[in-house]
Image (cartoon, rainbow, N blue to C red):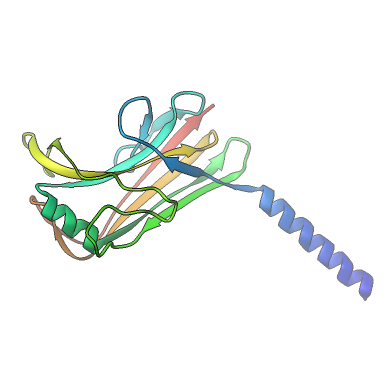
Length: 185
């Protein structure tokens, strides 16, 4: 009986060790804006191919509104998540998760993975539904990923706890974006 328990425990530990080596975390570090990156966005990455040996891969997305008061409302009443799952070319399961909570101060988020959303910046952009360029104020999530070559799915969700205006539309509930991409060596 004692030998059987030891054998079962040894097999269990071996299975745990094998499972631990069969998956790996994708890591992220803060990234600035500007050129010099392969930009990965949940809104347009399906079918994109990135190169692990090229410029760093920067996960980037954000939110913009007509004015800073609408951005304050966004930070106060919205929270979200971003996830990447996939399989590296060596068969290792890969994953990444980050999240952030509503910010009662109405200022840019600091995420669970320590990524600071950028300070508000003025610029121009195209409103939802198209049309000409308009003045906007926005904030960005930007992080450089340490990601192995493989095939991945990126999912990002915005969860609005109450209606939020951006000067163009009103948002409530959950807005999600999902796409697939490949990282080559």
